[in-house]
Length: 192
Image (cartoon, rainbow, N blue to C red; front, side, top):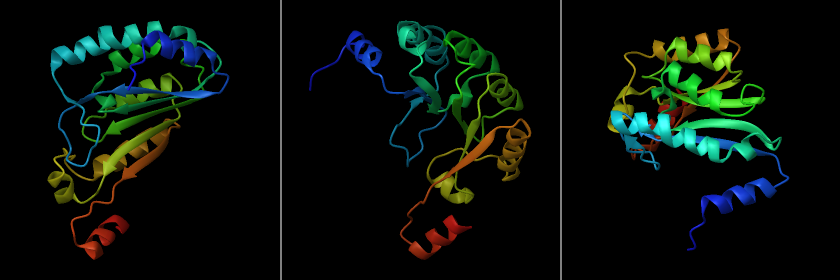
């Protein structure tokens, strides 16, 4: 397989006339969930700081000619866990992206153990319109089996959704079907 250089990617992207969305990866996780195929990098403070102070800003600068063009119609922040970013880091990164506030469609995933009202306030400030409450399952035992951190109680999910909605943000939740081998129990859990 031929390796493609950053310059070739920039040229191809610059030559497209199609509207396109940008996915920005937040590769850090506090745990590696069993079900996840992405297997983010386990949180390490120095790597995390370098990513948001050097690597990502340099990538944004390199791709600025495209990011400032009118072909960009959306931004999706996924992970890993974008909500490991503080409100200050979010502002610093968002301010680097040309025309970011004006972009009409912006989404961010939230780990339910890491969100804060301050982060949601920043999303409102930067005209995000959708947040994804990464719930996975309301069955705490199944979530723990998948090596995923669990909020202290289910009210955390609902508080997040209520607060996001109060800011005018649309909310989605990702619920996963976990196959434990007992199909009836698994379907009942998903339905519940």
